[in-house]
Length: 311
Ligand code: UDP
Image 1 (cartoon, protein in one colour):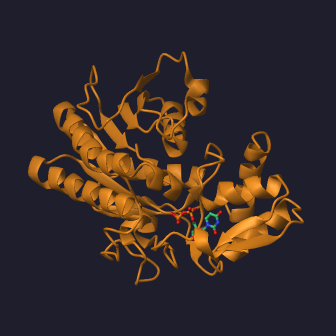
Image 2 (cartoon, protein in one colour):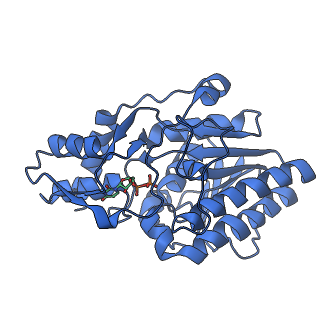
């Protein structure tokens, strides 16, 4: 296959580039480097099967040559990033998805949309199944991301139904691992950075809110299987092992021997921050025969090792 990956210089996009190249495919990576970084794909420079194009996909996209698949991963994805770039976040989810779908139509390519557990908002159903329609505050601070991704899902299904494009939608739950930005504001890089500097971990609110953390290699495996299977409705990919943010802080302090403990920062909790989040992965298990394999301590160990050289 020859595949286009948008957001190729980002955390997930760069891991996808590696995976598709390892499977013997040719990759065209696109990124405007708003939140991505070419360091993540520097090891691919000069490969004849990889091409990088610095481009903002909210503008009309032209890619030379055939394409068999498009994976649309371009978007700010951490709460502080999408709060800093609210308009760009809305544009890449709406205009960027429209443009990449247009390329899929033009090239006759399969299309995979990176969606998110944020489409469920602050969920009232637990764990979240794909048929749950969500509880999203459109005008709240997180609305720019949530609604962009909800629109992206809507237009992806519309292109599937109206233009018969072969589409996939993956709803990605909290994922962590090497190549996250240390300063992207998400809880795992924040906590590991603080712990490695010997600082107290900043728990927003009382730390009772929960998340379920998936190691990046498990997520990439699930996405690869989804692309090559035949299924158009959304599929949750994530690790269902749920824990409170307080527990996560404790685990990271223990693993790094950080004596500085925890500080509670009530004021830094963003309005609408979901109180619970856990994927129901029955669909992924049955459809893709996929299940996460890396447990939290193994994944955190690899991630801590990566961040050690960067603090
Ligand atoms: N969080 C925290 N301390 C931090 C960063 C985040 O307590 O330094 C909390 C945040 O309030 C949220 C959870 O950790 O409840 C996960 O936040 P993250 O930004 O990683 O992503 P989200 O799942 O909210 O999109």
